[in-house]
Figure 1 (cartoon, rainbow, N blue to C red):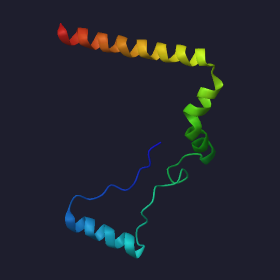
Figure 2: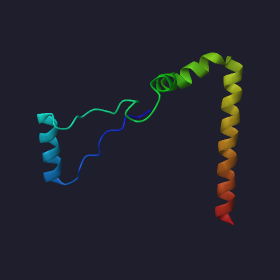
Figure 3: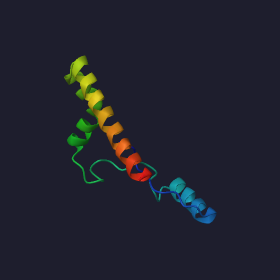
Figure 4: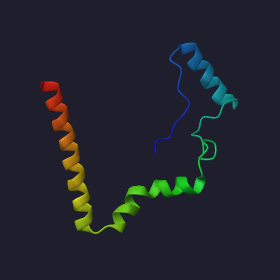
Length: 87
């Protein structure tokens, strides 16, 4: 999952103040921990393994079938979208 950091201000003066606040230690410049985001840390650790653990659980044939099914679904959605816009 992408780390979310504090949004940087566009205004030059505000950006300069943020840099000073970070340098003096008044504001921390780090990504929030799972606890700070209200998530269970053990669940967050399991989620980071996600695709790799799932790939190990399936055989090569099963992974291929899953991929083909996903591709067919994506193409079907695209075809339906194209049909709706051309009418």
